Image (cartoon, rainbow, N blue to C red; front, top):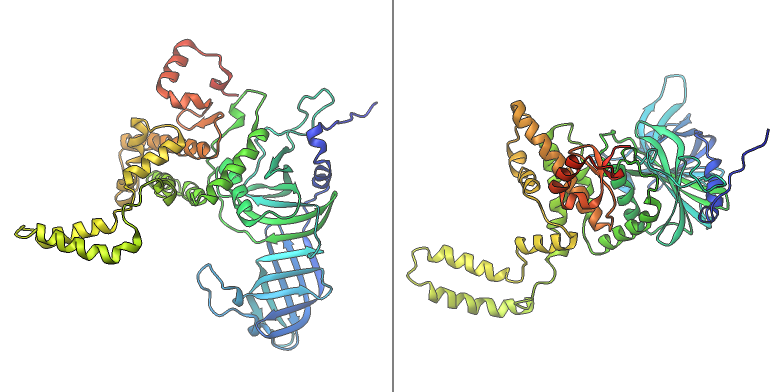
Length: 481
């Protein structure tokens, strides 16, 4: 019996060390027993403790014969936000780990035993934390890539051998995207490993945008790693316990029977475009927060959030650019009083003199502002396509759904079905808008039919559907996989 040898392609050999590293990962919890140094403010104590981390949560239990827990407690809850100075800082006395953010969750002191203090670990760093590494990685929760067609490994004949990872580049660095062993309700964690040191924060945000959008829900960075060769040097873990909500991905490769799917080639430009958008102050990250908000399966809430995702983009200052500066802001102080006197003189005897004077002076104050209509024209010119009548009708639901709604007010089945169709149209539209801003023009999931459709289908949507249904098209893009 002969062994099957898997040959990596030339592109895959560039990240062979990262493939080897990811092959060695195991879903193992972390534990520490020994002395723990605890600090808060000017107080520092060393006590016996046990620290542990499993999946996305960690804790540390400290014990001492002398009361000490009160000195580590935070001063109030501050809602979901805790100022940095209110966190306790913990570290292993041997220097093997540290947590710069921990908070007391429980204190107990039995009559005949030591005081026990339990702290939740918001962050945990392990390994050689000061080492500079040749490769790095980010760990995402909620971005499971299980259903994506991946690129490695391949057999000797060059054919796809397994759905096991994606080799690509990000910001010019060779990169690997692959599932990790850790599985939660949000699916498997996903590792994005790449050559070079850590990403800058804005680069990390751009990567988060693409990973979240393709996953169809808000992904979360739950860790980062430093790698030398195929060995992990250090790891940082971040607590994550957000409730899982429904995913609405813009792609569904399971419904796409074309065996050549070029996401690894498209991914680098999408990440680069996301970075450009952030540098232009186009709030695509805010848009995604609205798009993936938990609607609790209420259609009126869902369509409101989808339209808010679009409005966050349309209304941003980036699309107000290009207008002429009619009045130099430095000239307002001297010019405005003169204009006000002239307008006051011209309106003498008018029945609405005071109200009209106030309004006209206010308009002069905003003479440099670009109108809402001009912003929209600039936006759609950037996107590269126009709204269709049924898409506009779907978007017009924002205000009535925000202020009245009708699903929650026991709408009849016909109205419910109408809104359901409009929600799907609106999601199709916003998905395509974000894809266009990211420079993607490949196949997209059509939420009205559940089919993957080529980009051009949506541009000529009605005509394309009629032609396809009449001809019984064999186009692979028109046939579910």
